[in-house]
Image 1 (cartoon, protein in one colour):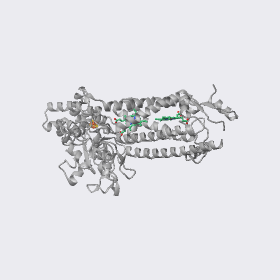
Image 2: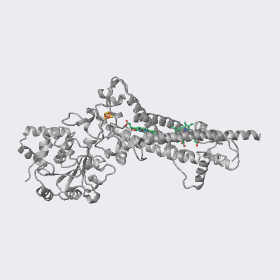
Image 3: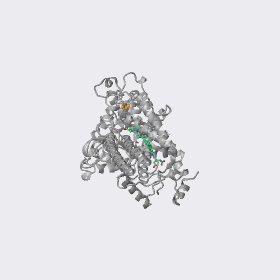
Image 4: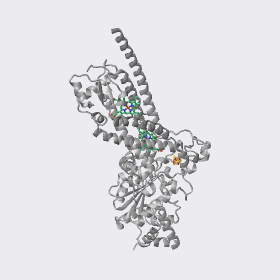
Length: 359
Length: 238
Ligand code: HEM
Ligand code: HEM
Ligand code: SF4
């Protein structure tokens, strides 16, 4: 029989005390009540572990880099021990044919029972030749592996939305994975990269509860993507007060005022950075003095400068934003109205004159 | 008092009619409340997009952005409630109350009159026509730049509002839940909402100019009609 999570953890030298601590921290980070601690512990003690296959398409590996830095106590050991045994081409020991054999083996042995985690996305142009995995286009491997999976996790902005390789004009036609995989539940965990603790928590949730977390309309787990950075930003009092940084080196920047005018995308970005923070809760971009760039939002590369409050609109072939477009139109209409009024006045003047002549 | 219908019939039978009751009180009330709400929305909206310069001091001493946003949202609610009331009145009010929502696009005569009005504004027609309700060109521009734009502004505005009010709020359920996925993401909704403001600004510029100009140049009253409801005609010619 396959080992349970608990057995794997004990084998890794984790004490029962640490194990229970892990369960309660997981419950807390998932927003569950204390009564769930027991349920999580029970699930991990009794359930045979679910294998996870982790595939890499067009990506920069920042998701993996983030993931292995998870500071959530023990999560690193736990989740790595669950994953490394199976398949992750950047983390596992096996290589070459030996490695590829693992996928086939898991597919056969755990048909419909493993989780597929995808980092990066498949390019579709030139029959997918821009990303080759084990001698074949990545898109083929992806579809095949997804076919027998129980659920699919889309790691990061790449797998979820396309990210930089899909930015205009997207020469390789890099495509988010939900556009090529059908009929499987897909959990999107966007971000460039996603927060480590969010990644481990999503995996833990799926492994322990045997189901995917509640998703919003765009396929993201509500528990981590239900609020904007702006909703929980610690600089929010300065926003409400109307106190803004106006230049990177001004007094307001030193005082830590709101970065709205410097193009902060916190008000339009759904992520947990302002609550969870990064690197063991040390900081997050805004805390370090830089606005949010909106890396977990769809198409964030194509929305103009990271440093403009108003989104750039370049449809007209020139640099513009909503106010420039609108003010130009208003100027034209204003001039037309003025000219029209002048001609109208002339016409009226002449009419009155001729009226007068007729009398 | 005679209804507008009776008046028109009277006019059709060649009797001279000098004044017709066109805009009922709810329509007039809505017009001015709505105009005020839109003015507040456009000004506060502009400052939400490009905030005023910062003031020094403790954050707790100020609430500039808070007040501006509050005024925007309060005016947004007034706009919504007023618009719903106006829709209701389109059903129970007189025929002119329906002009904002129904274009007689299958009526060739109406299209000819749209063209006539265009020619009148381009100084190609020497004399204006008389209209009891809106002139057809005004009706056309009101339908696109007011009725449709307002629906758009209400949908996008309350979708943005629901983001702050969060999942579970009525605005989130009714608007945010489908508007944000429709546009892809919140930033695009902001941009379109912002462009919508400029459509309204253009309308108001043209509208106020046309109202004042027609008051002077046409053969009927305009501004006073929106105040008293009575349309006065300046001559007896048909
Ligand atoms: C934000 C500003 C304004 C907006 C959005 C607006 C919108 C409208 C709308 C939608 C109507 C049609 C009413 C209906 O059928 O229920 C209307 C009619 C009218 N408005 Fe305004 N209005 C604005 C400001 C003004 C101002 C400042 C004036 C006065 C100078 C004015 C004068 C009129 C007049 C005279 C009519 C009647 C036109 C006719 O009889 O054909 N409006 N307006
Ligand atoms: C004629 C109607 C309206 C106009 C002209 C208008 C104008 C604007 C403008 C220019 C912005 C700034 C957009 C940006 O660049 O981010 C804005 C933001 C906003 N508007 Fe409106 N708006 C209108 C109606 C509404 C309505 C009906 C609501 C609903 C309550 C609403 C809610 C909002 C919200 C929530 C924001 C974002 C505020 C923030 O990000 O802090 N608006 N509006
Ligand atoms: S810094 Fe950004 S997220 Fe924080 S309050 Fe200002 S605009 Fe919002």
